[in-house]
Length: 351
Length: 192
Image (cartoon, rainbow over all chains, first blue to last red; front, side):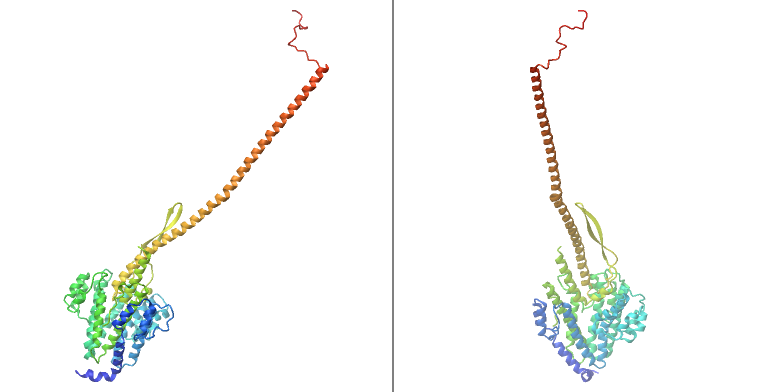
């Protein structure tokens, strides 16, 4: 039904949507970024951040102020907001939030498994896990030796269970396979998320599906680009491409055959959305890299998500924009602390 | 290339990589096992001092090839290159530093020996030499003086005996003994 979104959404999720829009209005503007770029020390940065929505989040920090402390505090603030939203959500928004955290959970699981292989203590690893990806069985990950043990003993209760179906052929967990495993899990996760949004229908599907398609294609491009010159074979590479993007199936097949950047560019000539992105990539250290171009496009799409109402995509968009803002602030802080101001304007602005 | 600039460049590329790829520090720390760049020590002889020289060599494959496969791989590759350059410079610096310290030690030791020889050994020997020479001179003088004294004494004795003889001769007690050669007639000859 066309009108169902307007009619029913606000009943369950209206409060949260209002809250998230208020938070979005508190993101740093261009003027704030200009102020931050002109700071000379990290203390100035802290003073400037106090006037924005961040408030006194660094108030309890002892000297000296380092970039990693800023990063940790910002992440803690984001997690606080995210948990608040999540705790107040109802279905189907809470499943949506669960899907959002799966990405971070995958990273945490890979971290814990590789640490368990090296016989490291679980306490230290837990401290390094991404807080948004916490799940209750985290401490038990180190008792498993092989992936099947891991699956049956630990992960079958978590939302990650279905994603492991495709990866059960990995018998040994050495370094090569850890990364491949991580990317395979992420591929299954992305496809499951995409199907969930699509089934949900309505405005959510209209907003989230293009974003997730772009994410899938972006991963395919980056994996291809980074696997030139490594041991990853073409078939293994193709197995890592998520299939929920615009490139499926022809583009992915062509990408799997690509040997260098020029061939990738030729594949892209068939797809109107990505062609201008690749044109904008500069050469070497002067211009933007492919990753920067992709980040800008993602930011643009996330901002556009806020132009529609009554859908779950605003939460996803807000989290991603917040993360980009954190990366920007950390970048500016690093440039200031290392006194290397030449590239300080290479952050991705959020319009 | 200056060490400071290389380190600065490397630290900055670390910031860039963190910006694009997120936080990969835990992945790196978890997967550490064997070192990829190792160092061999050779011996080098400079002016008689053996100095260790370090040279680096690569061993094994890059175990972080696939890190950042999903994001930031390019920045990570640049980061690896920058830090590899920094490590090479560090190895060179370490070689220079050890040779500096070793040479410094050697120079100090040599200096001490030179000072000791110059201010202790040589004066001692010189003093010994001077003493020996003085002794020999003295003995020679003693000998000379002894000889002179004996000559004097002999002369006095001789004069004394001559005067005695003269006195006796004058008193007529002593005649000159017959001179065999001066005799014209020889009594013992029977026939002439």
